[in-house]
Image (cartoon, rainbow, N blue to C red):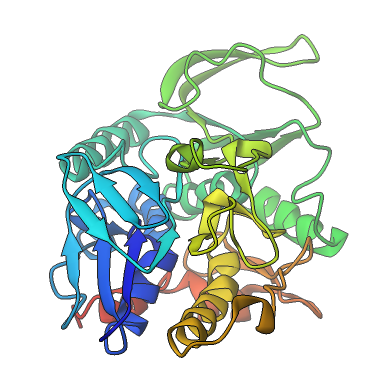
Length: 360
C-alpha cells in the first residue's frame, strides 16, 4: 500500500513536491487558492497586466493520481491534517509549506485570486497616472520593481529608498554596486541609509509624503511599501517544541522538522533552515525532500539519511531590472545583463511553471 503524504501549501515547494511524488505515494495537496501564484511575474504585471493570466495558473491539471483539496488547514498533528470544515486528511508524512505574505499587489490576500486581479488593475492605473513614484524597501521585490517601472515607463520619476547603505548588503559588493549603477543609468534615484518613518500603510500602495530618518520630507504621487515577506507559519505555532525566529519563520532541525513530531516537515519561507526566503532556496530544499521522503517510504531511518544542507548567506540570486537588464550572483561570480536576461529576465520562468502545472 502506498504511503500517504499530505502537503499543506501549493507554492514553489508544495506544487513541485506533490507532482514529483504523484506516481510513488498517495499524495494530497491542501491549498485554499484556486490558482498557483507565480510571484516574480507579479512584479512585472504591475507595468504589464497582460502577464497576469499566465502568472496565475489553475491547479486542476497538476496531479494525475493524487488530489488537490481546495481548503484551509486548521490544525496538524502526527497523524494528519484537520481542515476548516472538520474533515481529516490522514497521513504518514506531512509537509507544511504555507509560504509567506507580501505587500499588495505582489501576493494575494489570503486565497482571493479575483481580489488580486482587481488589485493589480487598480495599482496599474494608479501607476500610469503617477508622475513620481517612491519605493520603500530595496530587497529583491523593491529593486526589481524599480527596474520594471524604469524600463516600461521611463517618464516616471522613481526613487528607491532603503535603510541600508547599499543594495543587497549581505551579498558581494559587486552585485549591489552593479545594480545601483544600472538603476541610476535608467534614471532611478537611490536614497540609501535612510529609513521611512511615517508609512501610511505597510501593505498597500498609497499617495502622500514620506518623512525620512534624516528629517527630510518627500512627496510622491504613488508610494509602494515593499518591506519584505512575512512567513505564514501560524499552523505550526501550537505544535510541541516549536521556536520562532525572524520574519515569523520557524526554526527547524537538520532534517527540516519544526517540532518534536518525527514525521512532520516544514519547508520554504516558513522554515528557518539557514536559507533566505527565495525561490532559489526552495529549489535546494525540494530535491532533499523528494529523496528523504522516498527513502522513508522505502523503510529507511531518517537519521541514517543525509541532513539538509542550506545554501547559507551567499546563495545565488537573480535580479532582473526589466526584461533586458539586471545582475545576478551565481555563487562563484557576478553575472550581468546577458545571463540575467537569459536565465530569468526575458520570461521570469513563466513558461516553466505553466509546464509544471500541465498548462503547456
